[in-house]
Image (cartoon, rainbow, N blue to C red):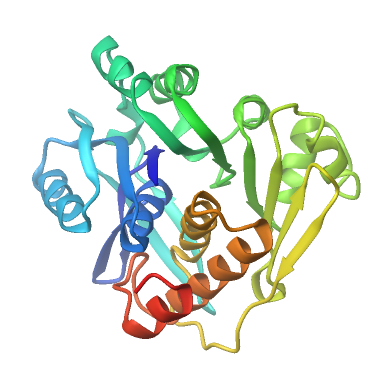
Length: 292
């Protein structure tokens, strides 16, 4: 499969430890680990951390040909973990607020057949990147458009959420984001699934609910659940992104929603037991996922 991820690249800084991340890059990295091809559209600073970022993306095996150098500094997120649950603060502006796509880049994107375009709310917090995202969504030829609602501080608006929904075929959010999306589209939490399927392109809705597992709702009325395993979480950063990547990967491989969600949940369980958002896969997880 081939996935294009659009949005923030940043370094998660937790104490004296720094880890490369950002949801779009995490998804792209996991797609490559699973066996797919991935491309990231973003920007990093023309600074020491930015050049370190480019080398790290190369090591992940992700295509960075559409990552530009910006005069703004490379993105960082200060991470605080409370009982393993992360909270974030971001530099603003950051390089990923300055993502731009010229005609040549848009032409290259439109001529590439993609299995999925992955995008979220955070990168759309400022105008330049938001404009680039809309241009990309209009240009891309993709089987799926995967919208990851990623609520961080005040870096979203109802219009950003609605714009993302209007173009999406798959929506992902966590249980804390459900009321935010409900408010954005003017419905109650109880009626949110029905209300979301009023968006004509939307075919699947993923909701992650922590220890209660993950749910997939389909336009034809099915509700699918995958539970979490009995694992001890040491780092939840990137777990939801691994689930997104695996769900897309196994759907593209021909699995139904139930099997894709089950395997995605297995990978998320694995990721929370390892440090970092994109850990190496060991033989045991490869066997469980059937990607040996």
